[in-house]
Amino acid sequence: MRKPYWPVTALLPVFLIAGSAVAQQYPMLDRIANKVVEKYRTSTCDQLYAERAASQNRPRPPMEQRLIDVLRQNPSMRNEFFRRVSAPIVTKMFECGMIP
Image: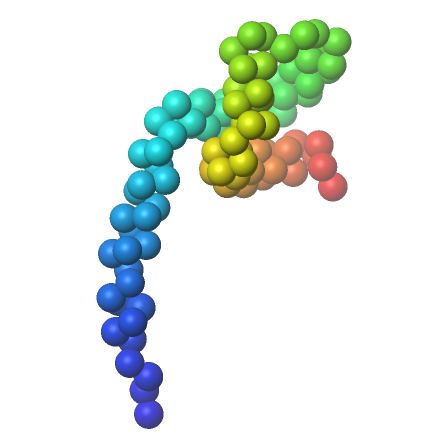
């Protein structure tokens, strides 16, 4: 006996609309997350190692600091940003041997 799948198919448009609403809620976040993901996808491991070493002793640029402040103040925006950038960053760091 098969269970009916109508509840799942009936709710699919709701999930799609909700997902697109989140994407439209933070247009600035879209651009920044895409930029971060693209940076990690196109950077070589040597470039990431060099940037990591250089960034330990420098102050953050004002734009980067503003983004960090906004993410600290807005948990839903922070969660959305992390959801978008986590997998590509962690994958690249793993491939480069930066994490076990």
